[in-house]
Figure (cartoon, rainbow over the protein chains, first blue to last red):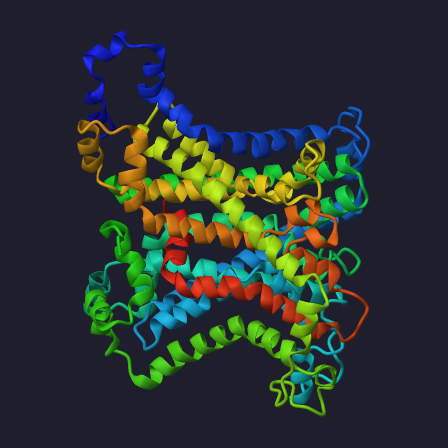
Length: 317
Length: 311
């Protein structure tokens, strides 16, 4: 359909000046339109991305230009147990949080898709955790999980379930559970609302037909809802995994990587090494080590999108 | 509203399905009679209530803490912790008159508005060029922009810190205004591409025949029709800016230059055991502008969120 636009190229144009050419040639025009966006993305995204990889091969520190040291930073990290702990934490955090986000998000989307009073208001309310800046809600969780004055400990004590306060953010296992909980809490609305938008494109007549055929609710979900939702699930979950994997602010506001590094993710560790300790080279090596994982996630996303293309036929342009 | 029909259908349904006409449209009422009321209580209302309560409780707790008098904050046994009969605005007063909070709020707003405007300007041009000018390699550029969307700030902040330092932007709001668009442009370009595609091409052809230039077409025809998309992109970008943390934490140093999220984490966390009141008041005051904005533009917000995933 784009070719329809061409007929404007009038015959006399060919003998016009270079300026006219520049103004009317589609490729040049496209180039001028792209300049602002490309300038930003090249100077502040592509260039730093390359620079980061270069920095990871140098011993740069804050205030000192580094020398090329080949893979020394990586060798150093290879023997660093805290680095490996952070890799383990990141994988655990991503995997567990994404699984819960998917499960609860899908469940919530199915619930919100039902017919009920105050539906619109409920849906609007569900999204609020996603709107509020992560750090600010993380602070609320910090207070909820306080070691002495936690409302959860208090409630459980009133119910007689525990006798001592739980040291939520001071105990390694509890701290991990708490940050994962906070992450799931923040991520569920996003998953639920996007899946809900997908659910609403499923035609109700399919369910009516299935009901007439005597399908149970589980069968309807398994054989109608789920297959029709897979493409959007693939995309949503890729985003979710990507942002969970590179999470920084939630951890930083709640635990700063403690207790004894139990909640250090690769992002927080690289911040600590690069900015607080000043070892830019080492920090850059940690963040560059995230790239392979991200590439894997992007591949999944890409194949998810491809699959969507053939499922939806010509609708996808 | 100038919503374009093709896109507005499912978005409207997403949020306003409670109106009687929508209920008729989606036929969902048609099957719900198959379930008895007690069954619906257990399978629908009960789990839904639990989830919604869990999702909203932290905000209730935040708001309650910010108006509780200090002695009630820490004495859970003498007073009922879930309610207070004598709310105080002491914490807000401290926030507004004894700290840099108004400064921080202003910084956040200033950075968010400037970065958003810059990004929307760049994205409109880029999206229009990719979708409608279809220059050589437009598809490839579109794909690259999508990839840029997937590059997270947490692998860019270290090299960006050195870049910011080199250009002498360290500790200035300009550092954030120039770096935030890297997060916003890919997202809003992708979103606007979707909106521009829905605008009938015939309109542009007519304008071309009448001798309009591409710039005139963009400003006078495409943009007015894409207003819902622009609002969505604007609100979403604004929220992302407000929420951004790691760049602001790395590039800003002096107390008065900080943005709200960074300032609250760094400046309010001292040894004082009574800090919780002002901490929560700060968190609440920092979230309210976004929640209010959201309340007015729920539909646009949702369309931005789902649109970016769907396209």
